[in-house]
Length: 321
Ligand SMILES: C[S@@+](CC[C@H](N)C(=O)[O-])C[C@H]1O[C@@H](n2cnc3c(N)ncnc32)[C@H](O)[C@@H]1O
Image 1 (cartoon, helix red, strand yellow):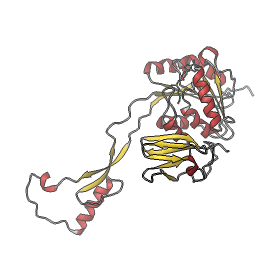
Image 2 (tube, helix red, strand yellow):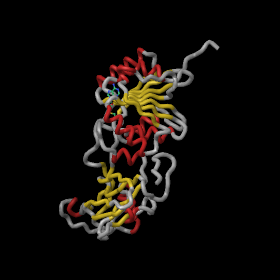
Image 3 (cartoon, protein in one colour):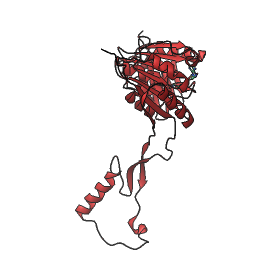
Image 4 (cartoon, helix red, strand yellow):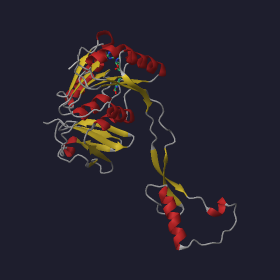
């Protein structure tokens, strides 16, 4: 049996014991661990694991009755964030990507994170810093810490992630001068700033990010960062606009100008121009019939505020030499 790693070692074939993300539709995904003799049942039918073992990741699996199908995807941090069982509020992809960039997460980096929460961000950090970096993540809720520990084991992340059950506001991180970056997702992040400073390396730039939903938390954290000698203190909010593809009827030109009979024909060039214009607003150009057009438009419900991201850097210590 070989468990899938969610990092850099992608594999092609699904084996017994592997974790698989089952994609049913864009709103419905789940994870299963392959086990000989087990069956996945859903409203589309029954999918025996034995028929999935041996398939390539990315394959379609058909239900026993031949009417339903699902896709079997390789787990990745971004898919994990979409399927992770929520024990807490979690970080989503827009914030994850922005923070990873600003904290300069890359292979070999040492990162400190607290709280671990549901481990959504931890998985992305782990992939960014693998194979030579390390994530020390701290969680004071015992059950959450244990659940995350089990997931890190199941996902083959133990060489890259160490989780500790610890109250970092009361006891600090217990790390001195080792971290390239510290990420705080805590109710009172300002109380962790002194400990974050102690944990950061002093021979190079240290980076910190605090993720807080309220502006008052940002104010207190920024003040604490300033008091402890951090520089370049900035706050961002990351908002994303989703687009969806829709097929809509094209307005009838006669109706649009008040029911008058329009007696003109588009010549070849006009028709081409009109097609190009509608194509500029569409992903796939015109659909099958001439009275419909396929458009990409912003989703009706734009995602709102998640949290403010406060960043700061700690300059390297200048030695007399
Ligand atoms: C919002 S969750 C973190 C979610 C996480 N960023 C994710 O993406 O899944 C905040 C976590 O911080 C933990 N926490 C709160 N105070 C803490 C403290 N003093 N020390 C360690 N963890 C703490 C909470 O138990 C909670 O699980």
